[in-house]
Image 1 (spheres, rainbow, N blue to C red):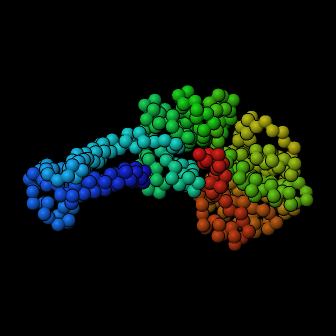
Image 2: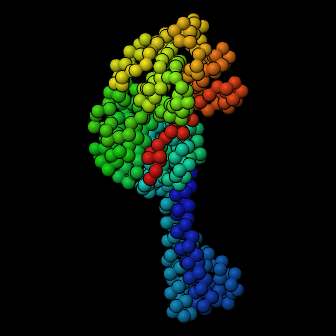
Image 3: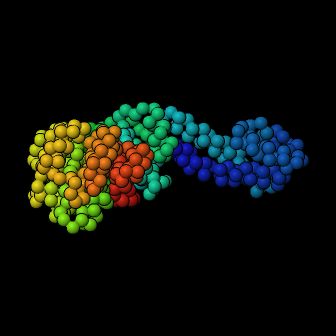
Length: 414
């Protein structure tokens, strides 16, 4: 943990000093210096002299008296140990007390070249997992308004970070986080408005962090609405589904499209944030490869209207919209009446938020249309989904894994 690493840094300079002071005391006694309260020490063996030398760190010379007789060099060495040994012990005690009384302040004062992460959700875990692979020793501070004790201990012990409870928009906390010496701020909190508010304040107070603030926005409409603002232009803004969808299209779909001779048919089952961003990526990077796009969602008509309102890219493919639950057989009957999935190598992306329904539908589709290339989504990494997918030629993917695979190196390098 960070606290332990700070303690190790303290020990690293105290031990050599302690060794030097011990050698000064031991050398003075061995050289023939006598003590006012223990004159017999001069005739004692070396082990006894070593014992008295160590005792200086605890009680100084109060129980053995002051150096007398002997050479000037020996007495000087002993006097240095008399003053230095208890002073060293006192400094260690004071530091321990300060650390116990105000551990956060003590740790924050020592920060430099560090990363500040706001939020303690799953996205923070993904970012930290990737960050630690690239920078295992980088100082990291995680901030959130409310943190459960177990979650706090998990972050400290697994990822070696400082965890601070507080509101990132408060000026006092911004100052305490030493952002003038930070290399990056990553805003991964649950409140989108608060994230932009924090980014705005940080940029005003610490303009050197321009382009080094990474901001996650949960709501695509809000993120798109804020795109032309100064705070967005000076920050790196993203949505986790954008990140995942970009990885899916780039790493798995474009290669498949290019292998097929004719333009492809794509069915997107689930048109929430992930489905919408998949379609955007397809329009941007594979528009010439697609002939037809089928969209299925329980709220498909409204979501398509919302997506059209914000999307600026032209469409050069046929679009079919089907409103209904992917679990309802009638939906697939309607699709089959408009899009023949039995011909060619159509791609079906089942990306709703229900992992069990996604996998069930994928198995049914692959059995009914073995020619299809089926993708089934899970949110977390699932050994079950991967195993079933390998057995039945289904491409199972997790949002979390796509995010971790596609976090840009520029968010990690320092």
